[in-house]
Amino acid sequence: MTEYGIKISKPGIDAKSGADHEMSLYSKYRNLTIFASGTENGTSVNISHSLGYVPLFLAWAKDVNNKWVPMPGGSYNDFSPGSWHLESFIDTSRLRLETHSSASFDMKYIIFYESLDE
Image 1: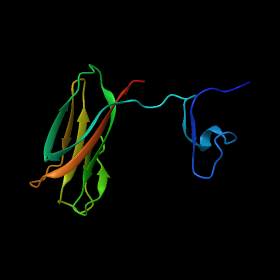
Image 2: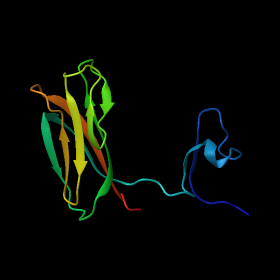
Image 3: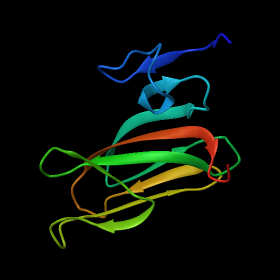
């Protein structure tokens, strides 16, 4: 039977003969869909969304070594105690990113259409 759709294989793998788990993208399976994304700067940022439910999201902050580190949901204390504290929260109308630092940090985020309940 002929298969239809899009397959993008991992490096070194033939998309025609590779196994499903060797694909970077395969339209046979559901993929996350981006609702909004962006970069902000500050110590506390609110990003409004109009979805009306709690969506999936990812967020990062650029640390003092100029590296992007994940901002987990809830709170997280950084590598050097007392230096900064990361928090990210999302509800039915907004995403909140906080560093709890006196200095501003670059923060980036992706909000997906998919719900946390799916």
